[in-house]
Amino acid sequence: MAATQRIGAGVAVAAACVTAFAGCSTGTTASGQGMSKAPGAPAPGSAVRLIGDGSTAYTGVQPHLPRPQRLKPGQRPPQFVVFSWDGAGEDSHKLFSHFRKVAKANDATMTYFLSGVYLLPEDKRDLYRPPQHSPGRSDIGFNDEKGIRDTVEQLRLAWLEGNEIGTHFNGHFCGNDGGVGRWSVEEWKDEVAQAKAFVKSWKTNAALRSEPSLPFDYDKELIGGRTPCLEGRTNFVKAARDLGFRYDTSGIDRQVWPGKRDGLWDLSMQLVPFPGHSYEQLTMDYNFRTDQSGTRTQGDPDKFGVWGDQLRGGLLQGFQRAYDGNRAPMVIGNHFETWNGGTYMRAVEEVVERVCTRPEVRCVSFHQLADWLDAQDPQVLRKLGTLKVGQAPKEGWESFLAAHPAPEPKGVPGAPPIKPSAGSGR
Image 1 (cartoon, rainbow, N blue to C red):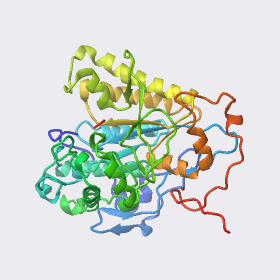
Image 2: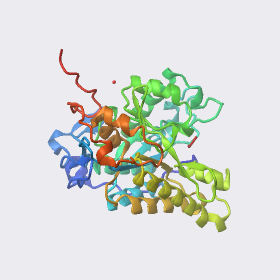
Image 3: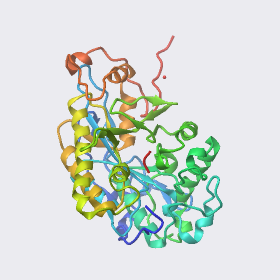
Image 4: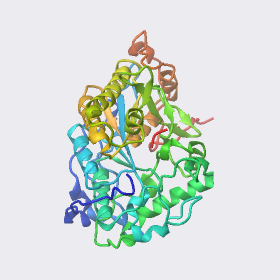
């Protein structure tokens, strides 16, 4: 979201949410292959524990968060698809609220990577002290009171619906002039600390003390992110490991099963077919747009339809290749944008509608995918990792995964197995 694209108007959440988060969401997520039903409603109002100035609060277990299930011997894996959004915020185009509704209508949850400066008002910009830049500098600007209120509302509702709130950090610095690619491990840790601080103090910074709290403890909620422009990954992963993160999605990979990189799940974005071209393209709106209209965000209107068709076609071809082949989780990254007449947003919405309700498909957040991976037999994951792009087991799934699994790990998702007595987007 550019500095000139201010995060605009919205509607305040129901007053009942101020004291009783349970009133903000009802029901449970439908069960699906690989996931069991989520716990019910969030903790009652009496269990709410405000954190700091009340910008965030502990409200109990996140509702609609499915409990991962280990694959049974010979069971075909579900087809996971992750839709994620960089720099998530609500502006006058209301794309955050729109895609929340799209997700709910198609039995999907998503990951929203929040830029911390979207919760920092312009007049408090000097509170941000970016690594290798002067205080108050940001390549994506800051926000205003209405924009912060509207963004917080969407973050609150998104989490209560089972979506994940990750991080896209703060100032979005790319390139060689103090860009994140040159940041040290300690500078990354400082950037993450500031991103958390802006989330945990938006009420004070924006003078919005009467607004409802965000219903989560961000120190516990935040388990992964995507670096600006996919730069600086090496040092970020080292910092993230020390900070207790569980995954990173700042890389580029083929459509194969993920493994771990320095202790974090490597949930990189992927290359998919690019209709009309002999090469593949990254699963992100920015990369398709750059190939189509270069640096122009609004190119030739006569080509908008074709360009949107190319993104939709590429994502659907990549999905089908995995669905019929190795069942590798598919990772898709986007922005809330109106580039080239909004053609990419329409294409992504159509992809959600066409894939998320298909049999054996689970459209999930990175958090949910990481939980599922942690619940699996490591030997099974290693075997899945031997399958190439689009390659289904020749002998069939039942024979391919027929081996007796190792004991299932105990404890919370993300915990290591208990050893028996006497492991360029934007």
